[in-house]
Length: 142
Image (tube, rainbow, N blue to C red; front, top):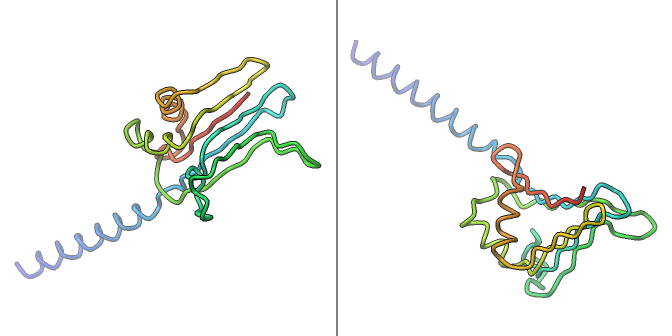
């Protein structure tokens, strides 16, 4: 009788271990979305270094300017970067990411919002996390 109880508990423990493993592997993709409403008077410009990009191209401390919309033969009104799995961190963790951003300029319907210090940038980024597990960070001009 004790042997049956032991094997039943072992079986339930094994099932629980598999269930937890499956749930852990279902972390959402961590993404940064930069988008505009597609209106002529909406834009997002980020002044940063290449450390904010999810890939390493050997130029990490080089300055970078991301402008959306991108003007060209095909105007681009949004772009998305994928950083792996998991959610975006809270304020303390977000400071590590935002320290690579010098400023964010958002123009919505002709109104300019300039985020020019680390505290303002971090607060904005933390506030604009959403989705399952806060895995999506959106910088948007609408």
